View 1 (cartoon, rainbow, N blue to C red):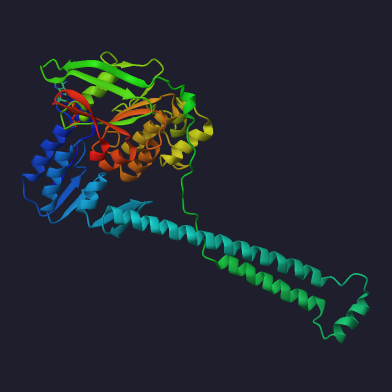
View 2: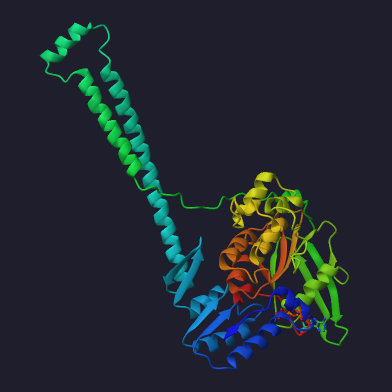
Length: 406
Ligand SMILES: Nc1ncnc2c1ncn2[C@@H]1O[C@H](COP(=O)(O)OP(=O)(O)OP(=O)(O)O)[C@@H](O)[C@H]1O
Ligand SMILES: [Mg+2]
């Protein structure tokens, strides 16, 4: 039996159910039937802590399942084997996700070490080869200021090998060195991503200490569902604030209100960066590189660098946007945000539907983001890595939350 998560667009279709409410419904349906094997695709999308806990409890009682998930906590707690698909190959690692990461890290270190050794040995052999070649050339020449008959006598009396013979010997050892180089196992340099940051000053960031504010926020949906009542909301400059709250508490609603810009005031110099849920702002007729450059205020070098850090290879960046997968489109949309003049990011569950390498790439960039950021996420590892502050929606109010309790 397979639980398939619906795509973003389908979830968007059912506007009156929050993301988490939809996932809960589908999970309940999955677990209502017995099955010898469960194939579970991204079950924690949108789920709050309580929902994830329920799922974890259910998984403990299941003997065999194949789980596709970007929730690293869940993978660590539940899985005893990790299957990775990379460069068209399937690799299996024993142990949980942390153990897999550790094994990958060790493999990377080993590969780097072997590469250094390889390069060192190549350099040594190349210079040995040059020396032998040089010596062979010199040996073939007769010493300066000596006539050829004198040289012959010298060689004969000292029982030396003739210069020709000596030159041949040296040539031979040069050739041997060359052969050794040719037969050495070639080591590839392990790939490491370059580290260049966008110049944040190019976004002309605001200097106000408070970037967004609502002193008394009240909001009720037309059907009578009240979300906020006289709530106070304030977003501080330079903070990366995570918005917490149970499924259905109003996180997405708050983000929509911010983007609407009616009930919540934003300082004039703030330029909002956000992911459009359907990613409709990506022009399908451009290449990845052109699309990233289209709205960029950064240099072409930074554009390429950011794309590389978001896991686009040199070949990928020449692809047309039209052929990109869902995850690739999200990464490209992120590249555009980082390169644009946006200086306040507002992101609602930005890592949903992304694979772990993509989450980690985006997480690494957001964790050093210099602007202001408000985001929601149910991925604890992501929140811990990125957030500097937290706000909690509770009883229709927005309160400060101590991240050390998270
Ligand atoms: N257009 C709407 N009309 C009526 N009710 C709505 C509408 N949109 C959302 N709701 C309800 O408002 C509440 C808050 O929804 P919202 O999407 O903001 O929750 P959330 O905190 O983002 O939840 P989740 O963690 O599941 O994403 C939910 O109970 C939801 O069912
Ligand atoms: Mg939501």
